[in-house]
Structures are given as C-alpha cells and as structure tokens.
Image 1: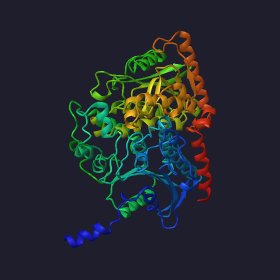
Image 2: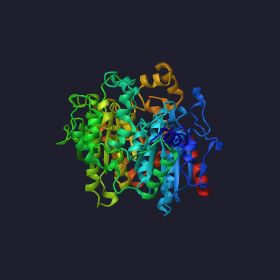
Image 3: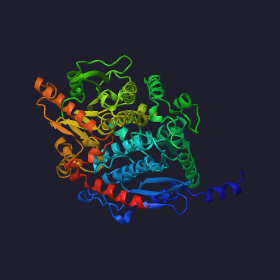
Image 4: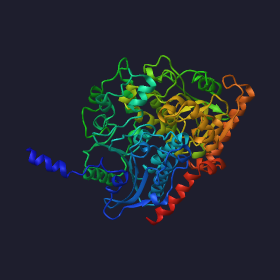
Length: 291
Length: 277
C-alpha cells in the first residue's frame, strides 16, 4: 500500500479514544435515539468530595444514556476517565447499578435491554473508600442479574484502562471489547510495585505492562472477546454485533473448571512469560473465542 | 491490628466446623466443609494463609488464583447439588472472612486474576440468586479485591465489633500515599467521614451490615459466645430466606437511609427519567 492510500485512511479515521466519556457513549447509538439520564443538569454530585477539598463534578464522572443500538433497546454507562481517574464513588456506582437494574426490569417484562459499560477506571475512589467498594459489589451483582436476559458488553478502549474492583465487572460481563491501547487487570503495575516490590513488577517497564495487561494479550488469552482498532465506527459495529447476538450460552466467569485446570498446570517456580502462556492457552488467536 | 491476618478466620472455621484441613485437591489456603448449623447442613468456606503456597504473593492470607477458583468450584458444587431442591431447602453458604487483600503479584496478573476473582464473585452471587442464603461472617480483615472475591456478594453480612476488624478498600499506608495525605490525616478524616474510616463501628453506619457481634477474644471464644454467633448466623439465614435474592436490602436499613441518601436519590431519579426515555 502506498502512503497516498494509508494517510487518508488514518486521517479520516474517527478515534474513539480521543472522545470524552459522553461523546463515546453517544457515538454508539442509532441516530436520534440517545437520551441522557441523570445528566449534569440534574446536578447529582458526590456528597463526599467537597468536604475533603476535592471539587465534585455535576455528573460524578458517570454518563448514563438510553436509546437504540441496531434497533434494539440498550443503555450505555460510560465512566469519564478524566474525572478522578474514572473511579467509582457512591453516586457514579449507584448510577451504574440503577441503570443495570432498570434494564433487568425491562428485560424481565419482555423488553430486552442490553447494557454497554465503557470502563475507564482505576476502581474504588479512595475518598469514598468503603462506599465505592460496596458500590462495586452491587455493580457486579446487577450485571449478573441482567446477563441472564440480555447481554452486558464491557468496552475497555483506553487510555486509563480497567483496574481494581471494576476488573471483576469486566470479568462477569457477557463480552469484553478492547483496543490495543487498553489495559485490563485487577492490580495496576504501580500498586503491585508498591505492595510487592520492584522485583515483582517494575511499573516503569511499559513493554511488560502491555505484554501482560494489554488488549492484544487479553483477547489472545481468551479473557476478552474482540480486539478492535481505535476507530469509533468499528467499535460501534462490534457492539452492535454483540447486542444483536444476545448473551452467550455460557459466560466466561461460569467456566470455572477450564480456568482452574489451566492454573493447576502453571509452573510458578519463576515469573510466567506472557507470550508463551498466550500460546499455550489460546494459540495466538487474537479474535478471541475461548468459549 | 498487630496479630497476623488469617488466624481468626482459621479459628472460627475450626470452631464452627470442627475441621482444619483443606479438601482433597484444594490448596492449603482454602478450607471448605459441609457441616450442621443448628439442624441444617451448611457450606462453610474460609481463606487462610498458606506459607507454603506455590504462589509467593498469597502466602500471608491474600486471595489469589487458586483461592478464587477453589471458592468458585466449591460454591458451584453446592448450587448444582441443590439445583432441584425448593428454595427453602437450598443449603446456606457461610463465608468466614479474614483476608488481607487480593494477591498483588505478576504471576497473578499474567494469568488473569481479575477473571479468577470474577468467577468466585459470580459463584457466590449465583448461589444467592438461586435462593441459597449466603452469609458472610467478617472475623478479621476484609480488604478490597479480597472481600469482593470472598464475602461481598452475601445476602447478609455479620461482623465482630472489635479493633481487629478492618473492612476497607485499601491499606492505610497505600491509601495515604495515593490520596497524598499522611496516615494521621487519613485517620482523622475517617472519624469525620464514615466511608473513609477503618473502624468497624463507622462501617456499621453505612447500613451494609446485618449485625455487629461482640466476642471478647475472637481467637479464643467461650462456649456461650460461640452459641451466640451460631444463633446470629441462623437468624441471618432465616432473614435472608424471607427477603429478596438481590442486594437491595443494603439500601433499606435506617443507617443506609441516612448515610447512603445519595444512592437512594440517584436510583429514584434515574427510574423516573427512565420511564420517559
């Protein structure tokens, strides 16, 4: 391919990562169907931040939009990574849980409503500590309730990634979509370095971080479903496909024996090489499909 | 706080089940037993420190890959065995919680500990949704991803009320560093702001607990204290059976109505706007 062909494609591509949380959510809906709920003009802020000298935000960094995706009912909940690192506080957590529960209620009443979670988050917001942790437990529970009726699709696009307790939310989702730029894991590299030392994990080693947590690796390992280019149209199209498909017959987080056996076979005498493990588990298949 | 994490968990598992060994095929860090509680067989699960674990980052009582998949396996076995029983006969599941945290290790991240933790949370929540009363007894520490993996999906949570109980999202030192505060400042804030506190009496103000229990020395409970704890567990089981199988009850207590006002308001507002969207 000549440069005259490559450049227009690159320039005309609409990056998803460069969009903010609200624009990301809006970009997924059929035209004219998106309606934001409990938006910034409702001014539902965190009651815990101002008393600690932290400026709250009128949407608490969590955007809820309801509408149609590929003609089907869906709700998108998007975490704004630029506000407090996308962290889960009382209000942002309650918004996500409430949206999932309402989708479940509609689905049970016959109006199947899928949920799409755009997760850019480090997990619990430490200024709201225990209420954030409790909210994440409730989010997980509400995802599990909804996915019996309609798919819950998690998208980790980057650049914050999805870490901490919210990585469990990704783990219990019906489908996980990632870009190469995205990362997914329980503990971020800084946390591991802090807790277990630099010999365990050197948080400045970016190649190592992406080799372990990166989208290509997660999809290649079968721990996420689709690796999609950072292109808003391609991401929207992947999501439409999953909304259309409905929930899988068996969710990844139900496949306990498969993964328990894999862990039993690990050699833990030294650190594990991510590439070899990927080949062993899923044979370099970056289109996903462990199930 | 100075006593080692995990001793209380092991002590209470032993007290309630009379057992102290893992099941065949399970790692030394997970104790599981089907035992009578009152006149009903219940499944007890506890994660304990295993200094010999082949995963170095779980040896102090953290919840790692083997721990999470073992919990998920054992809970799912109970769900499968009780599948055809009516709801009132599905066996209670009791998680005894004394966990330092999730495992902070490179091996764990490489092999996808987020998914392991998710399978355990899924198993507990699926048991609850299927009608099993799932009860957590916080006997020591309940930290962060460790608690999300083991215990936080319960219908009812009970905790002892002494200074050895710590339920939190992150250890003090790390939380101080990340929020750019001193530990002293963090402790002071904890007294004013309930969700920040490391004191279980403040945690109780969040309305998430079913009951606080007092045991003079949790490592060596008296016979009457053990009896009281058993009675409380049985009451919690009955209460769970009488209630819904979701986590809605965590917003219904008087304490929740006070401290989690914002959560309740968000739910009401979102529901009102949802109808018209």
